Image 1 (cartoon, rainbow, N blue to C red):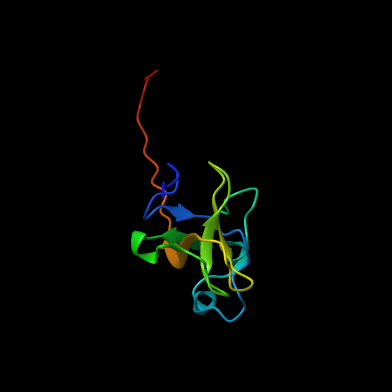
Image 2 (image 1 turned 60 degrees about the vertical axis):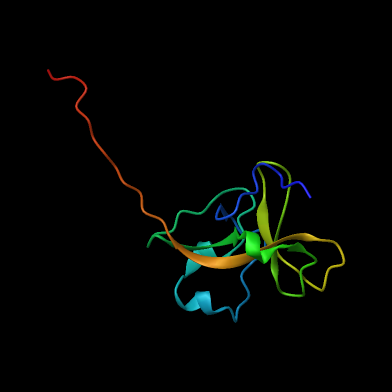
Length: 112
């Protein structure tokens, strides 16, 4: 099986489905970062967001109901939640809590 070039282990993927209401990550994160983001990546105000990640050990197999899996075309891969047991194989993903940190640097380029 050939792995698509942009599907890499430990790469974070935006959710293509909403996080379930009973998911434990809901106690840590509030707002838009819990919901699917088909057209944009939300910027969390507190730096925390929920994303999908694929690890090689998760495998390439048919996902079970409520498991997360990766799907999409090159450059538009998302993590989706299986609505039922699948018969087709996908890269099985895990949901992770991520803290994003933006660092701003300044450089003087000209003095007047």
